[in-house]
Structures are given as structure tokens and as C-alpha cells.
Length: 110
Image 1: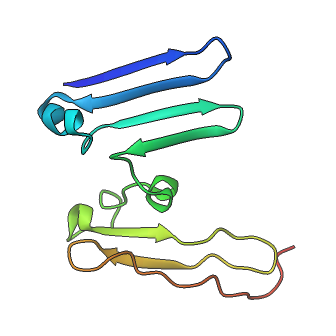
Image 2: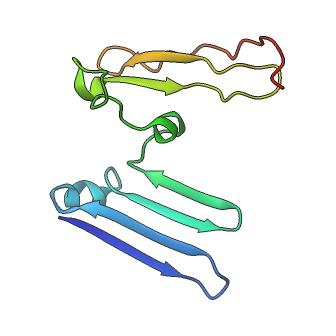
Image 3: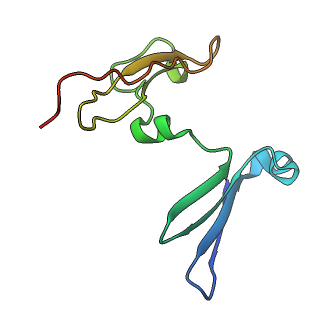
């Protein structure tokens, strides 16, 4: 069971939190669950949330990339922008931190 709390200020900022019942002790200690605040600037989420690379791609183990389950994910390290190409890497979270490679400039994107 997941508990989700939300509200809005008079100024138009939205805020909220969520935690699962089985993580209630961790949520009380600040080590589980998540909180957010959002407005015209976007959304700021803190707590037990996915990183930006994982949020952009999602979990791919159910779409042909199998064997390691949740431990085998492909992450975007940089988007395609002018004169830069996207670089991808495989991450094994069980044994290594995120494998990072710099965005390597290639031919200009038109």
C-alpha cells in the first residue's frame, strides 16, 4: 500500500510526498519515500527517486535487455544537441557506480 500526500499553496506551488507502508519506518527517519515541490520552474523531487538518466529512459529489462533484471539498465548520459551526439553506457549497479563517458562531439546535427 502506498500513501500519497499532496497540496497546493495560495501562491500556486504544488507540494507532496509519498511512501509505501512497508517503508514507513524508513520514511519517518527520512531514508525512504520522497517529497516534491513544483511550480513554473519545474519539479524538484528529493528522497528515494530515480536519477535523471533513469527517469529519462526507464527500466528496460522487460524489453529485450534481460539476464540481470533491474541491475542491467542502459542510461542516457547526454542528449543530442548541436555538434554533440548521445553516448550510452551499460551500468551494473551491483558492482560499479554509474559508468560515465563524456559527450564526444561528432558531426553537426542539422
